[in-house]
Image 1 (cartoon, rainbow, N blue to C red):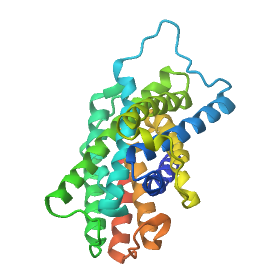
Image 2: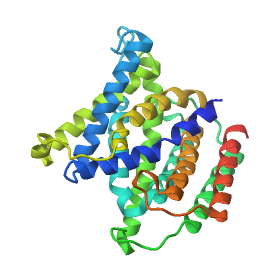
Image 3: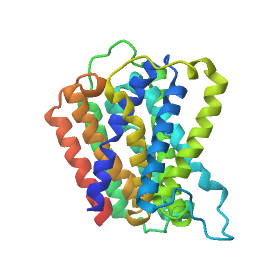
Image 4: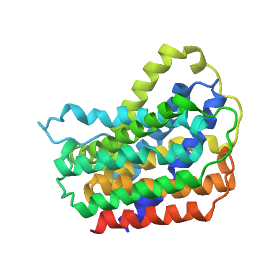
Length: 305
């Protein structure tokens, strides 16, 4: 059941990416401003959810307890994840934007599990788990090769293309760190809901400083009208942060991030196949479907073997 929850949460990420990318257009093409709006909405959702479900929105740290410096990295990595996706989506398209981070997430997730980094429980990384992760990568390659579409205006090419792809991998590394950090933070802050609040508060503060430094005039302007779904980014962001903090200690960081992204890939393919949420339409082929099946089976292998 926990794997199914992780897959479902991962399936929301392409919607967040598309929504934030569209919101960027309505705020003067300023990615920092659109990310700030998304994070602010996510923080509001997290505060309301924590108040309703836990009775007190304030973190409940044990008296005299001290948090390690790296607990604040979750918010930093969350900012990098959202900004990275906003930048990558119009350059690489939905498929590569949601798939490439897996390379970084799988590797970093296994490293975190193996060495118990960021307060994560040490979990054996057997050769079978590594094999399962490698098969996930094979599925990714199949999906990418089968998902090629004719180039359109705005696509990255040449050296620029590979730099954007590298950025996608690094975004994935940061996402794995965020999941592990938030998982630990949830154990010392009172709950995963409180951990989500802290994560999002750090993100809002960082983005507010960045927006004031780079786009102060845009903050005073009302966003231009757009489709209703461009406001969904914050809601999805809150669900993703809270779910990551809840699931990572239970499933392990590697399994959590792989399951998240298996769901993300499936949803990304569906989004492109239907051209939904502003994505460029790219019909689903048998080869791409085969790649998705390989990825799903590999997620189960990483968890069960």
